[in-house]
Amino acid sequence: MKLRASQVTSIFSFVLFVTKPFLVSIWEADVSRHIQNALHKKNKLAKKESCSLKQVSIRSMIGSDSELNYQEFKVRFAEVKFSMFIAEHHIPIAVMDHLSPLVAQCFPDSKIALGFASRRAKTACIINDAIAPSLLQSVTDKLKWQPFSLSVDGSNDAGLKKMNPIAVKFFSIDQKKVVFNHLDMCTTTGKDAATAESIASAIGSVIVKHSLSWDNVVAISMDNTSVNFGRRSGIMTRLQREFCPHLYGMGCPCHIIHNTAEQGYKAFSKSSGFDIARRSFSGFVLLG
Image (cartoon, rainbow, N blue to C red; front, top):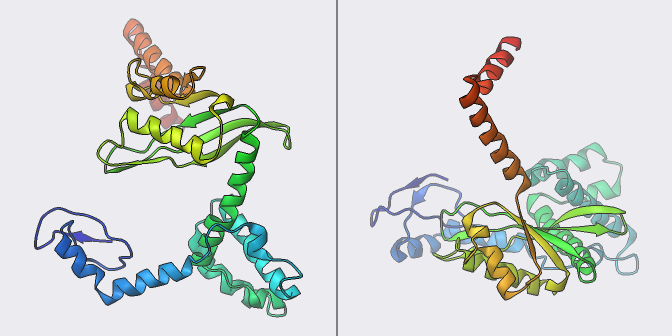
């Protein structure tokens, strides 16, 4: 999407459901004029209709033999399996616009293939509103009765909305190993979205949202910044004070190793006069 300065103001902004370049600003006059545009209304309606599935289980999405005829049941089953394949292997959802008709063309003698109709919009709805809630529920059900730890990272501080994705680590009895799963995006908004107070409050809200107990949270891992680990008002300090006194905090191991290697390199170069990084790079270039 290309943006140009508005005739009213030089401030830029974004508007949803835009497929062509247009004049845009955050002023009400510009936005009001755009949302009355026929193309905007058409795109908004198409998006709304394509995402009509809302928080349904995989079982209710597929149905059962008693509710559907056999062929329709198999078609829905295939659409869900393809959606799971796309999500598991991180394949762009847009590929379904090509794959959906390709299935029917390659298997014209199959009634299931001829009935298969799941392009990008439907696939996105299946993943977001049927598969994801079911998988998330299976994770939170396990976290309600066993210890687990949290890992929190954050998007950059630009803008008025910040994502602070939370992952959980716990021992899975079913898989007989320690597993790592995504729990929540934990978004914060407003001018204070990047402050320790807002992020700590959002993390607390996520625990409540998923009906989890702080008694089961044993540790949290975050980047080694003052916002996260400040002794007076960092996120770690606030979580211990407001929610979980026994919480153990650990800085990001990757950052610790990186900082250690960086300082070691500087000390070695200073004492020896040998720039190991530059010499190593030159050696690899010559070998290549």
